[in-house]
Every structure is written in C-alpha cells, then in structure tokens.
Amino acid sequence: MASEFFSIARHTCSAFALICAATATLAEPQHGIAMYGAPALPQDFVSLPYANPDAPTGGRIVNGEVGSFDSLNPHILKGTVPWQLASLGYESLMGRSWDEPFTLYGLLAESIDVGPNREWAEFTLRPEAAFSDGTPVTIEDVMWSYETLGTKGHPRYAGTWAKVASMEQTGPRSLRFTFGVEDRELALIIGMRPIFKKAQWEGHDFGASGIDLIPIGTSPYVIDSFEAGRYVSLRRNPDYWGRDLPFMAGQANLDEIRMEFYGDGQVMFEAFKAGQLNSLRENNAEKWDTQYNFPAVQRGDIVKSVIPHQRPSGMTGFVMNTRRDTFKDWRVREAMIHAFNFEFINETMTGGRQPRITSYFSNSVLGMDAGPAEGRVRDLLTPFADQLLPGALEGYSLPTGDGSLRNRSNISKAMDLMEQAGWTIQDGRMADADGRAFSFDILLPQGSTEEQSIIDLYVQALERMGITPTITTTDPAQFQERTNSYDFDMTYYRRGLSLSPGNEQKLYWGSAGVSEPGSRNLMGMNSPAAEAMIDVLLNAADQEDFVAAAKALDRVLTTGRYVIPIYQWNVSRIAHAKELKFPEKLPIYGDWSGWHPDVWWLED
Image (cartoon, rainbow, N blue to C red; front, side):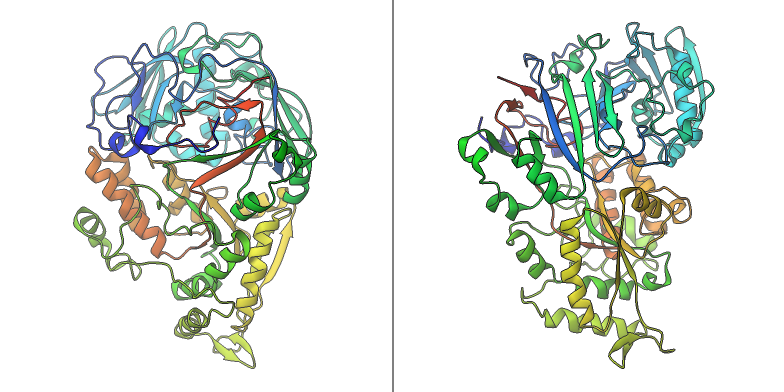
C-alpha cells in the first residue's frame, strides 16, 4: 500500500460541500443526524466509508506514549488518564463519522428523533445493547450516566447538562431530553455521552475513582491488564454486543491494543526501533526524514505512512496566562510573539519543513481571511469594535523574521511594545517604573524534549531583551494538577479543532473558565465578542452564518495574542509494522480519534 495516496479530489463529499448543505428538519425517528443537512449515509449503509468491512480480525498494535497515568477513568477531573481510553473504552447513544464535519449515526441507540427546532431529542435504545459483562443496557443506566456525568464528572460535561431542562423516560427503551436554551447542536452533543453501568457504582464515589475500579462500558474493548504509569492493555471482547452493526463493520479488528509509557520521546523512539512498539506517530518532519532510516525501515519491515487531512490546524504553542498580571497587557503578549524567532526555530527543529500555524482555524474553510474583515464577518464583529484588539477588524498576521539567529527587526519591535506597556531596560534587565524586573515561569511536563528545545532557543532571544524566565518541569500528574488550577505563567498548549465547532468552544474560550478549574481556557480569556460568535455558531440556521461566525471567532482568538504559535501538522506521520494495514479511503479528519487504531487490522 502506498504511503501517500490521498487525493482531496476523490472525495465524493468534501468538507466544504457538507458544511454548505441546506438544513434539514427531521420529521420522524432517523438512523442518524447531521449538524447541517442530512447524513451522507443512507439507512441501509454497510459500513463507514473509511472502514473495511472485510478486514480480518486478530493480532495486536502496540503504541507508545510519553508520560504516565494514575487513573483509568477519563470522565472525571481527578488524575491523569491514558487519553485513548475515552474513545476506546466507552460507547455512547450515537457514534460519529469522521468523514463528515459533524454527523452521528445510531450506536447504542437505534434511532433519534428531534423537535422542529431541535428543542428536544429522543433516543430509542437497541434491544441488544449490552455491557461488557453481558448485562443489558437499560434506560435507568442511561439516565444515571447523564446525571452523574453532569453533576460529578469532569467540568466539561457540566455546561451541556445545565442546558437540559428535563430528562424523562418515554417508553420501555426510549428517553427524551428537552433543552432549556436555543442551541441546535445540543441534539447531537447529548447523544455523545459515555454510558456506564449504574449498579457498578453503588457504594463508590464516581468523582474520586482512580485505578482501583475499572468502569464497565459497552465498547468492543475491555481493560485486560495494566501497571500504573507503565502500560495498559485492552483486549477485544469476543462477546461484544455490537459486532454485527453496520456502524461497527470494519472497526475493532485487533485483538489487543496496548499502550506503553516512556519517560521521554527519545527513549520511546529507541523502543520502537528495538521492536517493542509496532506503531509510532512522529510529529517532527526533520526527524521523519533523517532518522527513520534504521535497518527495519530499510528492510521494509517498517512502513512510513503519511496521512493528510482537511481539518483545521488548531492551536499548538505556548499559552500565556492572562490571569497573571505579567500577561494582562496585550502589548506584552504581542512582544512575546515578536521575540519568538519562529523561522530560526523551525529551521533548527524541522529543517524548515513544517508551516506555521497562522490562526486557530487555519488550513480549513473556517480560517480567517487575510486583510480587513468584510461582509458578514465584519457585521458580526462591528458591535464589539470598542472591545476588540488591534487587527481584528483591520487585519492581522503573525510577525515574520529574516531567519537569522539575531532576529533584530522583531526584537526591536518587541522592545518598543514592552516600552509602550511600561517596561524598559534598567541596569541590563527589563523592569517597570518601580524597578521590578519582568520575569515569568514556563511550565513544561517531563519528557517533552522537543518543547524543551524550542524553549531553550526562545529563552536566548528573551535574554537579549533583559528577560530571564524560569523553566520548571514537573511530572505528568503535577503538570495536570497545575494546568487544571491555572497555576502557571506560560506553558505548552495544544488544542485540536474540528470542521464543526460548537459547544466545546465555550469550554475552550468561555468566561466561566477564567475562575472555574479544569476548563480548557488556559489563557484565561474573557471576551464577550468570542462568546457572541460561539452563540452564532450554535444557532446558525445556514452555512453563511456558520462559516462567518467561525471566521469571526478565529479573528478574535488570533488577535487576542494569547498563544505563541509554532508549526502545524497538516499531515500525520505514522511509522508502523508492514503487517498493520488501514483502508485506502481516508476520512476528511485523517488521523483522528476513531481512525487509529479503530479501523486498522493486522495482515500476516
């Protein structure tokens, strides 16, 4: 199988075409639901388009992860959890197709029905739906799961639960959620919550669980064995209830999915070379081109696959915490961005092979356009003109350097911005009018060797400005605890974004996250303009408003100067054993949760 075979032109339904589809109203129970228009797959579909229904079963995949874990419950705030468990260990009423911007098909539920304006959503459970221990999934289990997640689960669930006016059983296998707010996306979001077995939790505190209790779910995989901080092994359940569902055809082909944890990326890479792992993602383009030529690759035993995608770049870089006085002034944040010598860092780290992230939704049809805001985008932003930072309406782009180590022009601009904000050089150091030095702490997790190297280069530039930050590295559990409580000045940050942004945007950028612990709003932004754009996203009845609101939100976020962006991953690079295969047809989301290792198989 060729490692690069993807062509956007071969997609029968492109991301843009799907986003632009006319809104459809469901008149009766349906097999699926799309945010806009109708689901692409018919009632009698055979499999998801990027799955191989004829794939053989058996074998194992062994992936590597940098870090550690001390919990097996990914649905609470407490603890550090292997991130894959959220998707591999649990199922929801509806399952998502990653070949459409935002479309769900029945999984535990056989159908969904909604009100004329999606003011309610009703689901009917499949009679065969069962937990991994063989007991049936009941409406009582479903209702308990929703209430528990909304009141005791991770804070990311609380926002949606607060918008549910009522939850009621409407039949032996059906229940209805009635929403208390206008929000067209809620009908989809509410169908994506993990379902637990109520009886298992009697006498246990759901919010305090760690590794002493493994939650029972309904997915094809169960946790077979683990060692805290070392590995987790998932085994395919031979009695999985949904193996004959069209939605699951070609999925869950592997008998074992194993995750091995390492202290840093280089140790993990050496483990892969030694054959301890048989699949490894590589985020560094230069390393991919220069270090993946070891004997197993030369023999053809290891295959290098490049997986393109059409999703937004998202934001990866170093976020500044505006809760701290150090970064409250946007001019200081802009100075930090100017001081970051991206061109030199990119050449050093990747040989200049990876393009920079230019905005949160760059690399997609939702990204902001160059130059001044126009048309509907301008109309949406104008009411907030007095609150927006420079560039939101006029146009904004990240500073570019000349590629040299000194980066003189941008350093000079950074110094000017710091002076405008009240900071000047005094006795060789940057200080305010009272002589207090400008200093801040950069928090990094242990094992983040690439991020550490980037910061080392960045600190050299800052020192030329009379600024000497402190770099603190912590173990994964401490890092998680400190970021959950916003106890940092600057830290590494990565936020993936989809082709259908919605309610999760308030968790990412909403004002509640300024003080509420555990949100994704690490920068501490409080922007009425951003929240207004999200409201338009949630209630857009047509593609024009939806796309315009996303482009407007992108402007607000990018000109907020909250994050110093680094390079983007507009493709995924996965090295894997030649026996591990995946379908030639790739989803528009590419290498995303729900694709690797979900639709992969082992072929001897």
